[in-house]
Image (cartoon, rainbow, N blue to C red; front, side):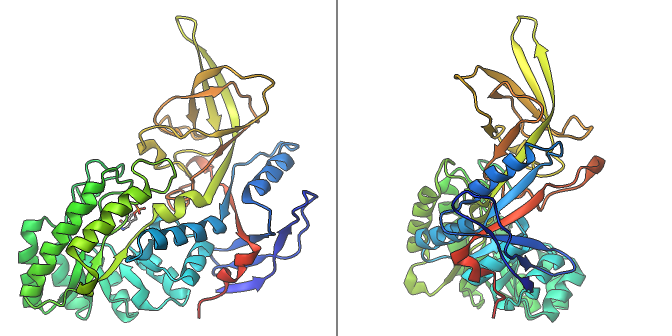
Length: 437
Ligand SMILES: *Cc1c(COP(=O)(O)O)cnc(C)c1O
């Protein structure tokens, strides 16, 4: 639902910004976002620099974030080009910003929803239910009823109890059996909680048959931040076994969902292209084009990670002199674990920020710890010390790749609220914010 259309324009000549108009996206009463259109030649980074400049003359230096919807469109093109047989269904839990979902809707992706609220948000944009998969294997009964009454048919399961609920509360659903995957090498593994072991799948398929529940295919998730392409190969091979079992029992198996787990950052190893090469080969081996199987994926991180940049301010500093005379620095920052950095504590290393400060000569680097603003000592921006030049209270740190699992995981513990978000779109892509028709 887009209410008012106007657009804020940043002139490319570097002169002062002139506000011309702006775009409001989302339900006017609830999630409301202002979108700034960028003229050709103006980048989101330019806007960030302007904003830092402006705030540096003030005492009020709140943290802020900027989303670049142009990058979102680029990620989509990259996905289609690299995995040509796979239709993306974006995982809403990763970034549910109304303008992000609106752009994806107009680019033609489907959506992976896991709760009633996520289903509602997507359906309210006018998305047809066939573009939605309810990809949560264990669903509250009232949510199942909501899906049933709104025509959402595709949904996942991995156990007998779920089939019993579905038979009773959503008997026309088209079920997708989630299989267990080896994910011990993923940064955020999921298999402790989700997925039926391969040797239980025959039993589940036959229970479904007895209950009159239709199984149309199979799915898996190799864990978010997958580091081993082989996990995809093995999971696709296992999905083939499930297809064969289902077909023997008379289930109309024709739908394969290869889940998420694709890296969002450029320097991640393996790269998206390396993963995709293994996936494409495995798909051609086990689900050749001639099989007629529809293949989807549920990327989250891959689409969202690069689109946001977080700009934070140093609000406190401690100088720690060690016994041997070495120096360490502790910085207190106005965003942290209870806001945008909730998942970063589970990453292997603290992310390295860009320091917005000019040094006359090459500065010394010191082991530094970045702490969030709350009174909890868990509240750090990442698990490890990082090497930084000496900074002062009032200096800025810029974190890139902050679009995945940052805004959707959040609380205002201790009264610290999430940073204000500014959304930008290149003016030539503005039409992607139009309502879906
Ligand atoms: C979280 C999740 C995704 C998205 O995972 P990414 O690693 O962000 O791509 C997809 N599908 C399901 C079922 C999920 O739980």
